[in-house]
Length: 480
Ligand code: P53
Image 1: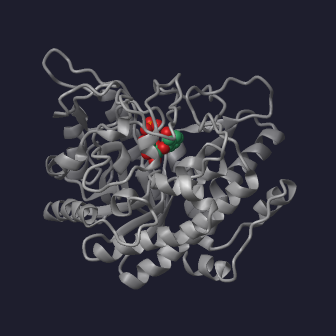
Image 2: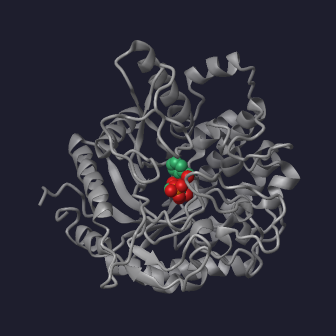
Image 3: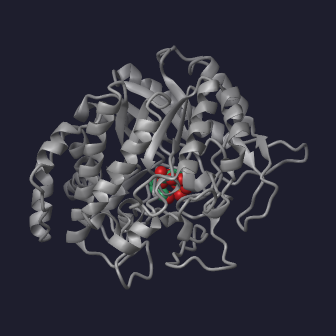
């Protein structure tokens, strides 16, 4: 037993994204999103992207784990664990199939009405991500995503449509999932919906720095406008940003390594965080832009919009940490999109993500010190291979250990004085991995019978961690 530090209002729960769990990719009027064009991969095989969806090819998001038809059963299981919050995303292309449609798709809106009603019935607060790597594909082909300023209005129209529709059902909103991935070339498609001509490998796309940062500027404006409009729709709304926090340590106590850590932290984390929280471009990015001939075009009211549309809270994903080194030939971590140097003090998951619970306490303190607004951990968890044993049980003690250690360091951070609103464990039900497209990389408290090739009954089954998390929530983090 640890001392109780979590408040009664602490939001315990789990998180998913539409494209990774819903399936029903073309049902009830939904248009394809960028994810629907991605094939499966693995740790060693990158996911490939087809501009045209091919007949007979397997696309993991098309069926995913069929949450679209099984949401009642799944939400009932979340409720059984005692979830206070359920983070999910709305698939933009379910509401506006082409992104630039005049009218929303009523069938899509009705689906989320049913999902939110189901949550409310069980006393679960929905936490909704408006854009989780799910830009309608038509916007990619027609506008090259957010590189075109008009897409800002399409997004804000979508956001205000759903915020108005669900204003009495949903209180917590996030604008763009892991927005800071757009500071790296591989984030161009996921976050910005940009796919430059001649791109073969979307992980390593044909990149245009000027265009990418201009598109990101449009996303900041879209996010800030959404915050402003959202607060008009319902002043009670709490609207946050969402970053993939990338925590770095210097590999050695070399001044140059430390400078690299500071540069990466500024560039990959603080740049986006500062714009969302403080409402203006931070001083350090100006030098980077100058050196790289990037010039951001602000429209007349952009600065006002950014200043007025700052977020109510800061949310982030946290899975692992990496080292930074200025030495040549240092050992890299496996399977990490961001690329980082291996830390000799940490163990890694089977997918090469280094496990670092103490780094979460460090990160929470670092962020709270910088921003002084409430924080929320909206993704954390362990992707692992789960086996069903002879008795038909899934004994995922490794997952319990991972989660326990992170809950302990969250409680340490709260003791330190950090204001932490809640915790949504990633992939509370097994789903399609975003990075690899696999089912085999499982995160859930709930197992889904499906394999990497799409075979399986889709039946749900509780893992050992299910009862563990139920106990954690019931004791408000005391009995771990
Ligand atoms: P998967 C990379 C690094 C950190 C977070 O990731 C990431 C990614 C993308 O692979 O994405 C977030 O499924 C994302 C989720 C994703 C989750 O982390 O690759 O918000 O959609 O599923 C875990 O193991």
